[in-house]
Amino acid sequence: MKIAGILLTAGLVFSQTLSNAQENKAKTPKLMVGVIVDQMRQEYLYRYEAKFSEGGFKRLMREGFMLTNAHYNYAPTVTGPGHASVYTGTTPAIHGIIGNDYYDKELKKMVYCVEDPAQRMVGSTMPGGVSPWRMLATTVTDELELFTNKRAKVISISIKDRGSVLPAGHMADAAYFPEGRGGNFITSTFYRQDLPEWVTKFNSRNLPATYISKPWTPLFPIEQYTESGPDDSPYERKLAGKDKMTFPYNFQEMIAKGNGELFAYSPYANDYVTEFAKAALLGEQMGKDNVPDFLAISYSTPDIFGHAVGPRSVELEDMYLRLDRNVEDLLKHLDKEVGVGNYTLFLSADHAVADVPQYLKDNKVPAGYFNDEYALAKLNEYLASYYPGKKLVEKISNEQVFLNHNAFDGDARTSGLDMFVVAELTGKFLMTLDGVANYYTEAVIKQSDFDEGGIKGKIIRGHHAQRSGDIAFVLEPGWFEGNSVQGTTHGSPYAYDTHVPMLFFGHGVKQGTSAVYHPITDIAPTVSVILKIMFPNGCTGQPINELLKN
Image (tube, rainbow, N blue to C red; front, side, top):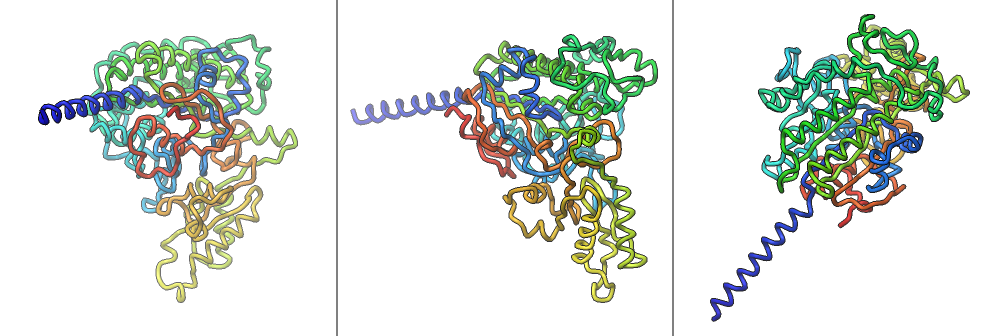
C-alpha cells in the first residue's frame, strides 16, 4: 500500500509538473514582433492622431500600453546605435556601435557599422557583405535563440541593411533587406548561403516596379493637412528630377529625368516591407508552435525621405498616415495567422529628429550649422601655434575629436607633448567656435559614473572606451553638423532627437499609459520578461513593470 501511495503521489507530482510546464508555455507569446520606425517623434502620435485609422497606431494606443516619456539615454542618436540599443538593452558604451559610420582609430579611416569584408551578399552580385560582428553584446533575439537552442525562428527585415542586421543579432535565421534599397530582398552569407524558396517566390512578384509606376498623391485633399506647413516650402531639399517638392510625385517622370534611386524615398517602400513581413510569417510558419519566434521589422523610409523635407512637411504627414495603414494591415494579418492574444508587439523608433535650423532661425529661434572641416582646419592651426610642425588632430566626426596618437609616441618630457594638455587645449578652442555648448575629454568621461544624469550622462553612455574619440563635444540646441539650409538630421542629446514612441501591445501587456520616464534600453529586458528568457548579456535597462500583466 505504501508503494502504491508513493507511486500515486509521484504520478500526481509528475502530472502537476507537466501541467505547470504546459501552463508556462501558454504564458509566453507564440510570436514577438518588434517594429522600429526610423526617425519617428512621439509627438507625431498626437499631431496626426485625428487622421489615423482606428486599427493602426490608434489600436496600439487604445488596446496596448503607451509610454509617453520614453527617451534615448545617450548620444549620438542615429540609426545604427538606435537599433543596436533597442535590441541589446544597453548603449554604445557597451555594445560598441558608436555611429552609422565612424572613424576607426586602428585602420585610420571611416568604417560602416555593419560592413563585413569576410561576408558576401546572397541573392545579389553587389560587392561586399554585412554582419553584426562589430556589435559586442547579445541582442534579445540572440537570447531567444540561446534559450530555445536555436529552435526559435528569428527573421529581421528593413530597407536599410543596418536596420535589419543589428536587430537580427548574431544568431538569427536571416536578416533581409532589398538590393540597392529598391530591388529584390537579399541577405548575407553570415546567416545563410542561399535564399529560401518563399523569398525567391516573393521576389518574382517584382513589387517595386509595380509600386513605383504609380504617382504619389495625398490621401486627403491638400487643404486638410493643417497639422503641417505649406506644401511648397523653402526648407525642403529637392530630389533629383523634381523641380518643386510638391504633390503629386510622378516617379516615372523623375526616373526619366535621371533619378533612378527613388523607391526608398516613396511611401511604397513601407508597403514593400509590410508585404515581405507577411510573406515571412507564412513562409517560415512563424508563431505556429509552442516555441516563440521573433519577427523584427524596421520601416526606414520616414527617415530616408524625412531628411530631405523635415518634420513639418505635408509629405511626411501623408507618409505617416500611410504607415498607419501598414500597421493596421500588419496587425490584421497577425490576428489571422497567429491569433489575437498569441503575439506581443512593441513599436518604437531608433531616434527622433530636429527641426530644420534655417526654419527655426527664420522664426527667431536660436539655431545654426556647424562645419566639421572648417573646425578641423582651424583647430590644427590653433594647436600648431603651441606645437609647431605637429599635426595633432586626425579627424572630427560625430561630434568627436580624434587625436593623432602617433604624434604622442615617446617621452612627453622630451617631446613636449602631453595628451591630457592637448585634449584640454582642444576643448578650450572648441568652446570659441559658434554653436559649441560644451566638451568632455576622455579622462573626464572615464572618471564619471555610467548612470550620471543630464547631457553629460548621455555623452558618457555613448562613449566606447576603445572606439570613440578623445574629446566629445556638444552643440547648442537647434544646431547640427552640416551647412545646407534645406532638410534636417538628428544625432544630438536633446529631447527633439531623444523623445520617441514606446508602445507595447498584445500578450502579457496591460492596457494603459504612463508618463514615467523610461530609457529606450528598457525595451529589451521587458521583452525578455514577457518571453521568460535571459536578458541580453550587456543589458543595463530594467523591465517596465507598469505595463506587465503578471
